[in-house]
Amino acid sequence: MEFKTTGVTRLETDVLILGSGAAGCGAALAAREQGAEVILADKGKLESSGCLGGGNDHFQAVLESDEPHDTLEDFVNTTYSPTLGVSRAMVEAWGRAMPKLASMLEAAGVNLLHREDGSYLRTGGFGDPGKWYINVGQGYRCKTLIGKTVRDAGVNVLDHVMITSLIKQDGRVAGAMGYNVREGGLFVIRAKVTVLAMGNFANRAVPNSSGNPYNTWHNPFNTGSQYVLAYRAGARLLNLDLRQNVTLVPKGFGCAGMNGITGAGAHELNAKGERFMPRYHPGGELSPRHFQIRGTSTEQTEGNGPPFYMDLRHVPADELRHLNNVLMPGDKATWLDYITQKNIDLSRELLEVEFSEIEFGGLVETADDFSTRVPGLFNACVFYGFSGALCGGWLAGIGASSAARSAETPDWPSEEEIERERLRVFRPLGLKNGVPQAQFENAVRQIMSYYMGLVRNEQGMRRALDRLNFVEEQTPLVTASNPHELMLAHESFMLLESSRLATLVSIERRETGRTTWRRSDYPHLDPSLNCVLAVENDGGKARVVVA
Image (cartoon, rainbow, N blue to C red; front, side):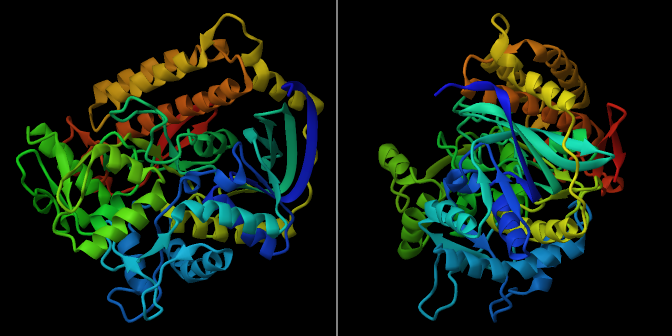
C-alpha cells in the first residue's frame, strides 16, 4: 500500500479523545453515556493499545465490605498526600467510581475472580493497608473485551492515527492534527472539547539491563506526548521530579507483576541471603514501591548485591499456583515460557530480580472536573494502574462531555497552518542524508542513563541539559526511510523534550526521600520541600515554580 504524504482528512466531533488505552476507553464510554459524539484516536489499534494491551492481573477497588480497611476513607487517607498533585476530592471521586467500573468490566466479559462465597478475590498491594486488588483471570483479554464495548457504544475509533499537535484558537484547544502511520495523509480533527489520554509515562529514556529499550515494564510506545503536547498548548506540568517510577522485575524479563509477587508474600533477599526490606520500612516488601527501590539501591551501593532475589518458597502452594498460573500470565502472556526456559520452580528456588528502566512520569495540572488550565482541554491520565486509568478516564469523560454541551463548534485551522503541520510531520521522509532515527534516540538514552539514573547530582543533571540541548539542534536532520521509522522519529522528538523537562525540574528537587532516585549532593529529606513543583511554558522558555 502506498504511503501518502499529501491529502487531508477533516473530521469533527463533540469530544475528541487522544489515546485509546484504559484512560481513553474510560473517557469514551463516559462521554457516550452522557450523549456526546466521540472520536477516539490512537497510533495503535484499540484492542491492543496502551499498557493494558499487554494484560493486567489486578483491578484496584474499595467496596465498603466488612473486610479490614475496605472503606473509601481508608483509601483516600492512604492515597492522598500534599505532593500527589491532585486534590483530595479527586481521589475520593476515583474511589467512588471503582465499584461502578468493576461492574462495567464484568459486563464486558472481563474475568474478575470471586471466592466461593461470591465476594471478589482480592489481595494487597504496595503500601496499602487493605486487600484492595481484585484478581483478574485471563488478564491478557482485558483490552480486547473493553475495546469491543467501546465500539459497541458507538464511539468513532481512529486506529493508527498518531497525534502530532493540538489546534489552538483564541487561547482554546480546538482539536488536533496527526497522520495515519500505515497509510499516510494528514488528519485534521476539530472538536468542542479535547481529552488527553496518551499515557502517564515517557518510556525508552533509560533501558534496563537487557539493553533493549522496548523491553519495558509498561508500554514502550509512550514517550511523553501526554506532557509535551499539553506543555506546548500552555498547560502546566506537575511532579516531573517525583513521578519517576522504577520497579523490580524478573531478571531479563522486563515484566510488570511485582505487585502480585509482593502481594503473595514474597521476601526480598540480598546476595548474602538476608531479608533486608524491614530495615528500610515497617511494611517491608509491601511498603510503597519507592521504598523498595531505594532500599535495594542502598543495599547495592553498600556491596550487598547484586544479585537480589524474591523468595516465595514459604508461600502456601495454592497461593503460589494462583500467582504463577493466573496472575503473572495475565500481566504478560510469556511468563510461563520465561520460567520454563529458566527452569525455575518458585516453590523450591529463588527468583532473581533487577531494577527496571526508569519511567519518567508526571501530571498535567488538573482541576476537580478533570479540566486543565487551558480551555477546551481535559486530562484523563491522572491516576496510576488499571483502576486509576479506567476510573480517571471515566471521570474526565463526564467532565468533558458536560463542557461540550455548552461549547461552540470551533473553526477549522487555516490552510497555511495545516500545510505547515503537513510539512513538519513528513519532513524526515524527504531527507536523504541526515541522522537516522535510531541514532538520534540512542543519544537521548545515553545521556539520560548516564546522568539521570537512580543516583544523581546537580552537576550531572546540568550536564545532561547541555547535552540534550545539543541533541535537539539535530532534530531537523533526523531521517526516516519508511512509515514505521517516521512514527518512531516523532516519538523520539517527544522523548527528547519530555526528558529535558524532567531533568530541569529534578534539579530543583534538592533532597532525597520522596521518590525512587537519590541525590548524592542532597542525601537527606528537606521538610521545606513538601510541595509540588511545576514547569510551565513562559514565552518559549521552561520555568519551574512551586504549584
